Amino acid sequence: MKNYKNKKINTKKIIFISLISLLSIILILGILEFFNVINFISKVVKVSQTSEQTQQNIDNIKIKKDFIENQSNNPDSPKIIKPTSEDIVISSTKSGDNIIISTQLKNYSDGECDLLIENGTNSYSRSVPVIYQPSFSTCAGFSVAKSELGSGTWSILLSVTSNNQTNQTTNTIEVN
Image (cartoon, rainbow, N blue to C red; front, side, top):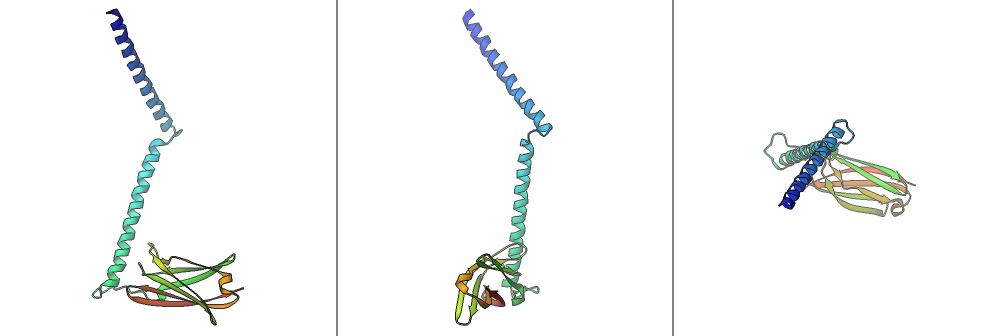
């Protein structure tokens, strides 16, 4: 019987020591968190705030997109926003051996961008989708190697089609 009591006492000691050790670790982590040595709790809060902000941004984007689509698809609406050629801004920059064609599309939520670059009988064309963004939409992007065009003055024609309506704008670029 004595042997049984010793085992029971040893088991209680082990449980007590384990419990004290666990509480000590929690206390030490709490102190380190309080003095900003570690930031486990604040990181968890920041991540949840970031998720909330991200969800709010997603909701705002959906609201704007729905508004634009409803205005474009509803002919009885007094505030119909139909994109025009003036809602298309096109610019070009030279980057190394490439020409980058950038676009800004106001009042577009979707559609297709058709790019045509011409110089005499030479031409280059490409189609990409419209990418919706909260402040303005854009064409998915155009990067054209200078070697594909050759030297000279090139005319750029960008056609944007959305909701069965096509608008166009032009620009020129000098390729050396």
